[in-house]
Length: 450
Image 1: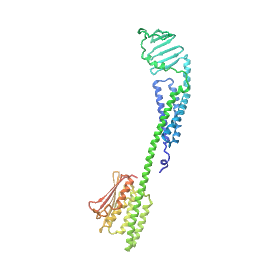
Image 2: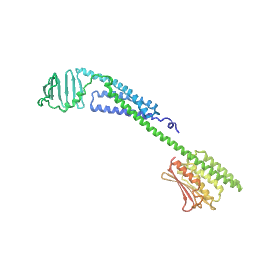
Image 3: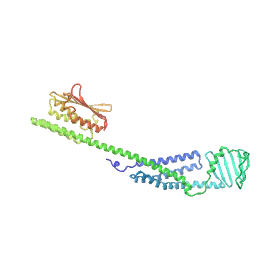
Image 4: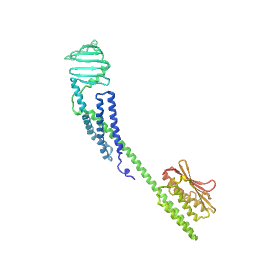
C-alpha cells in the first residue's frame, strides 16, 4: 500500500491555493464592479489599492492553512473553534492593512473638504448631492433643482427660476401643527433620494472599533468562509483516500486469491505428468521418458519465471500449451492430434498466465485418454469487437449426463474463479458438449485490458 494512502490525509497544495485565490478574486471583482456601477469618486485610484489589499488578504488567509493541517486529526469542533479564535485577530490585521493602504485617499478627501471651505459633499446613487458646512445646506438634484438653506432662508431654484421662502424661526417651545395652507409642497423624488444621504452624513470622530466594525466583521466572515471550504475539501479528500484504501485492499485480496488458484494448477499438472513418466518407465520407454523430462523442465522454467498474478502475451500462453501437448504426445503418440489457430494480430493480446492449461488438460484427460481412436485438440483465438474469444475444444467421446467427469473436476471451477477475481465480472466462461461430438470451452476476455 502506498505511503500517501497510509499517511495523514491532506488537501493538495494547489487545491488550497486555488480556493484562497478564488475566494478573494471573487471579492475583488464584486467590489470593483460595485465601484464602477455606483461611479465612486477616486474609483480608478481604488483599483490598484484594492488589488494590494486583496493580495494581503490572500496571504493572511494562508496563515490559517498550517493550523488546519496541524489539527487534521483533531475532532471537527476543535478545528472550527481554532479557526474562529485565530480568525478574529487576522480580520483585525487585514482591516488595519486596508486602512493604511487607503490612508492617502482619506487624506486627499480631507484636503479637498478644507479647500471647499469646510463643505462636506455627499453623493447618492441617483446623482444627487448634499453640501454641508459653514452654516449652509445645499441639496442639488440630478434634474438641476437646488434647495438651499442659509441664514434662516429656504431658497429653491429650478433651472433659471428662483424663489425665496422665509424659514420659520426655531421657537423656544414645540410649535403648533401648521395649517394646510402653511405646509410646503411635497418634496420631489430627488429631494426624497437625498434624505438617505443627509441621514448618512459624516459621522463624528470615533474610535478604531466603531469606525472599522463593519470591515472587521466582513473580513472575519470571509476567513470563516474559506475555512469552511477547506474543511469541505479535506472531507472530500478523506473520502477519496478511503476509496483508494478500499481499492488497495480489494486488489491485494484478488492477488492473494489469484496466487492460490495459480498454485493449484502446478501441482495438479505435475502429479499427472509424474504418473505419465512412471508409466513410461515401467513400460521400458526410456527415450520417451527422457524427452518428457526435458520438455517438462522447459515448461516449468517458462511458467514459473513470471508473476503468478500477472498477464502474459497470448503468444507466450500458446507456447506453454504447445510444450504441454508435446509432453502428452509422448504418452499418446497415436491418439493425440493438435490444431492451433491464432491470428498474428492477436499475438500480443494480454491474457492471465496459464489460463488455458486446465482446459487443455481436461481435453487430454476426458477425450484423448478415454478414447481408442485419434482425437484432435484444437485451440483457437479470435476477436469480436473489443472481446478476445479463446476456445479449447476436442472431438472426443464427450461427457454424458451423470458421468463422474461432468464438470471436469477442479479445472473449470479454477478458471471461473480466476476470471472472476481478475476481471470482476467482465469475463465469462462457457463449457459444454459440441453438436458434432466432443467438448468445447469458450473464454471471453476484455480485449486489451491489462
